[in-house]
Image (cartoon, rainbow, N blue to C red; front, side, top):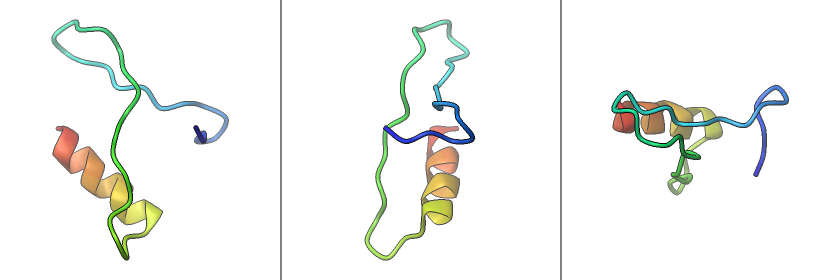
Amino acid sequence: MGDICGLVPVVKYSTGSADNLPGGKLEPGETVQEALAREMREGS
């Protein structure tokens, strides 16, 4: 798994559930920045 500025992104749940690694993937023709923005919207 890649990293962001030397860190690994982790999903923190407000319900107190265990932390998790984020899922998701690039959609055809989507940039990494677009995918990140979409995944953040979908995860909130």
